[in-house]
Length: 508
Image 1: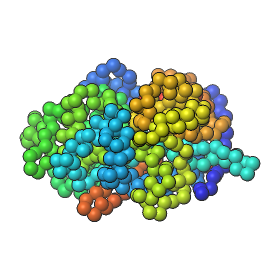
Image 2 (image 1 turned 60 degrees about the vertical axis):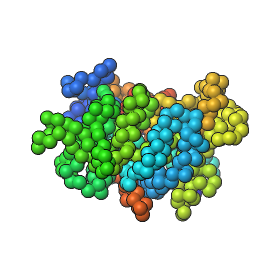
Image 3 (image 1 turned 135 degrees about the horizontal axis):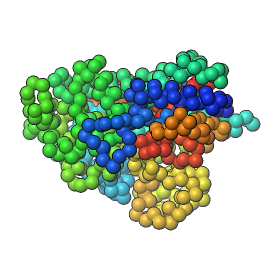
Image 4 (image 1 turned 180 degrees about the vertical axis):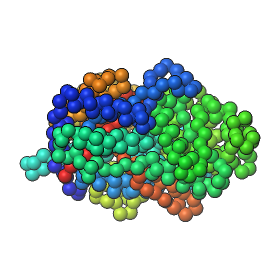
């Protein structure tokens, strides 16, 4: 079992109002100067942005045990391999996520994606290579070990699609290093030293995965396609990856929505090459570009597919020889149902022959409200009895979808039995007490850094390029993210408005 750590120190350090205002001014101007920004809220974003605001941020880096941080980084490589192998196991995904035997029978969105994948397979179309840009999310879990309080690492979820804020997480870590260098945080804490502020090179790391897929595709003149949501406020987090691709790898990027691709994209008969038409916009005068890699920053929620045409466009992209990031099977592998099934005895060994006890030690107890063909009461009864210590999760990404604690009983009263199989019950992670920070959101001014008791969620990024006849896996751990939220907020998404971007100060 993984050894635990002592709880982090009480936080944040004491500072005066004058010092807080100075730190806030330095932090927000640094953020605006260094691309730690997002678009302001608007009903409709203009085609060309006319303004930007700094991303929500924490004034201090948050304390995190060094041992648990190193463990999370070490485990990422095991998770990269695990989810690559899950995505290549058609029988497993058909059983767990499919629309005939799995959760896709009762979850319409999951079922729709699976049916697209099944239709392509029936036509003899299989992805040769898959790319995953992953993020494994963790919280610290408090316990009492031999009469002493301890904390250990527990996994919240594993993300296989649109794992965001890699670029801005690097920028916020650099911002905290800047504040430490210029103010030494007014000597408010002995922990706030350069050696305790770990480097974060997530931009180069994630782009390395995209560039590896591009090289594997083999056409140097091809471009990478970013599939994006209309009116995307988090556009700058994505643009940093685009700039790195062109500046360091000479790889061009085109950004289009599903609506735009419904008109511009075509797959050539025979070769299955994906082309995007850009008449009048290409320097060499050509009408279209070949696509090597399709990077989905959209497509993870039913809201991205408001009409059947949107699903048809996803199927068109998936039918090409362009490397998908993620492919539909890899997106399905990130389902909460897969996470739950992998905790069952013998399932993990299907993919990892030498399962690390450290990996298992990061799991909380979880179960399905209803197993396929099983008793429809046992899982629900357990959820009702333990509701105050549970969270219920559907097969969704993006924040704002879960049901917590006292809301569970009334939710179960209205959840149709036919939909119970789509939901997972998971024991709540009990986060440490006594941790706070100053949360800064745009428009609040230098006096608007709000002190709050907080919870911080660590995300570790990795990538995996895998597939081919030999089912080879190339993978790497490439950086980290910290999101911090007020303790009274159950959800954790920055883009959804619940969290702020943060970074780590390591403590022993």
